[in-house]
Length: 167
Image (cartoon, one colour):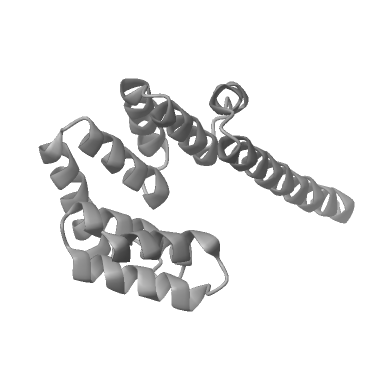
């Protein structure tokens, strides 16, 4: 009986490692500008695959496809702030400002209800991106500052915070 439990844990850990490796591969392809390869390889059901595929679609101007993909992914993973922020960016690019405002307001309500773990850098980055889209620069700055404090060596919060400071 115990052997099956250990095997199950090992399989679960290998699955997590495989997903992380696939996400790293998508990020590397995206960084090289291989957008079609990103879209072709991002076929999995996970939020990260949808996020990278949508980013690739944005990069080639397929905003409607990116929107559809992100809307479906956010239904499946409603608490994933990276997906939500990416969707808000796409909606802003499409000129759908009321939809962006609604998404920001929903996030604010859920944050007030304590639905997000604000001790995680990625959560603070998502909150910061959405606050910026809502025009709340001081809040965005505070969230980015918190994210960098939690994980000072992580590139994403530092780069995003720098971009905010340049705006």
